[in-house]
Length: 112
Image (tube, rainbow, N blue to C red; front, side):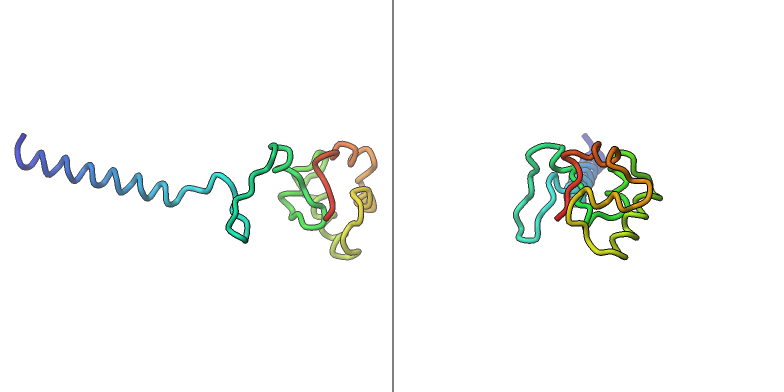
């Protein structure tokens, strides 16, 4: 091997190591970190997908079955106007959300 080939190989390896290191530094953590520094591990995927009707934003509310952006925004507006929900069933005060709708939310939606 010539000196030029050795230098090229060394620079290539160093660049690869740098790129790999930066990729790991920029990667998202596998589990979210809570404020106290501990990691949160949900027992099941269902636990991780639960939606608190009193704190959820538009995107989280849209994950509920039967809820699109318009109904999610209506929930946010209702919550702002009337205060937090005491029970999941209280969300039926939003027009278009019925007992049948929230029946599909069993084990997904809750109130804090």
